[in-house]
Length: 67
Image (cartoon, rainbow, N blue to C red; front, top):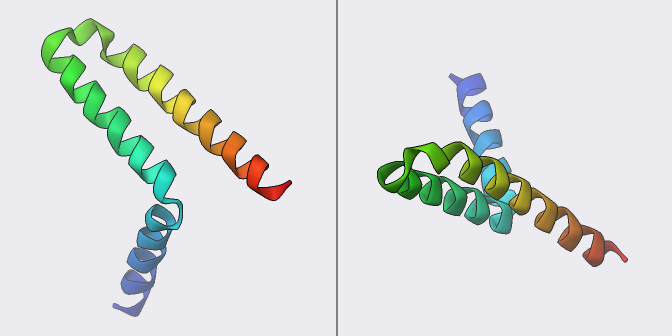
């Protein structure tokens, strides 16, 4: 039971550790769900472009904070 609790605590800290990345990922998934209801053919593109945009923005912001 202790191992399971440790794993869950680590997963939780990964998602809470970077709130901007978590919020961006949730936003991309929400937009993908919306696009799936409106235009299902666009959903993969929304996921790909949105995920890459969130990742690039977070990397650039982290690099700016370090300098």
